[in-house]
Each structure stands twice: as structure tokens, then as C-alpha cells.
Length: 116
Image 1 (cartoon, rainbow, N blue to C red):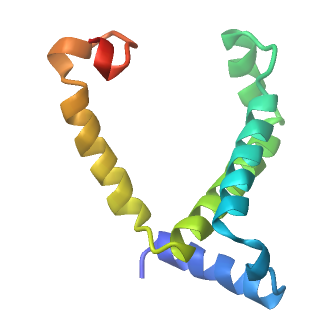
Image 2 (cartoon, helix red, strand yellow; image 1 turned 45 degrees about the vertical axis):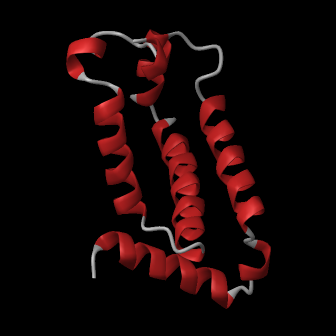
Image 3 (cartoon, rainbow, N blue to C red; image 1 turned 90 degrees about the vertical axis):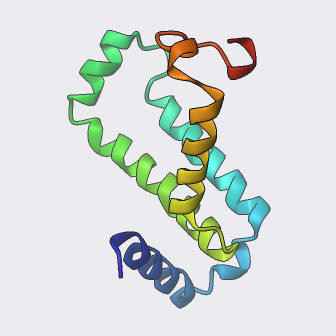
């Protein structure tokens, strides 16, 4: 068993012992991922790039890690509950982006693939 599967099983056990599965419908899980991502963004609101770098080197990193964990928890449960292989899905997206963003056309540019 790999670590991702092990973590997912721990999460499912945690959730099931509390009878929370009934609250974890796809829409609600997707909303929760967005809400937790917004809480992560809140740490960087109004900060310059330099201030954000300093912030991440401070004790605030622990709060940032908690938000990252919350996002990952909801994402792992969402994938598990909807039979989505997260690793294969990410690999597929990387392959798709390889063709959308050929190095010779996009290197050093931040344009979307349809504007290259």
C-alpha cells in the first residue's frame, strides 16, 4: 500500500467513525476544497512577493500547512468517493499540458495555450 492510499484509508476511518460521510456529497466536497483554498489565499492577501516569502519563513508556516492539509483531505476524500485515481488523473493532465504547452512556444511565457 502506498502512502497516498494509507492516508486516504486513515481519513475514511476518521470520517466513518464520526458518521460524516452523509455530509460529503460531491458538491459539498468541491465547495469545501474551494473554501479551504480561499483560507490559504487569505494568508497572502495584501502581501508583496517579498512579504509572502518572509511570511512563509515565520511561525505562520504552521497555519499555512494546516490549510494545505485541509485542501488535501477534501481532495483525497472527493477522489476516493468518486472513484477518481488522483495519481493517474494528474499524470494525464501533465501529458495533456505537454502537448498544449510545447517548450519551443511557451518557454518563459505565461500565456494560455490558445494564445501561444
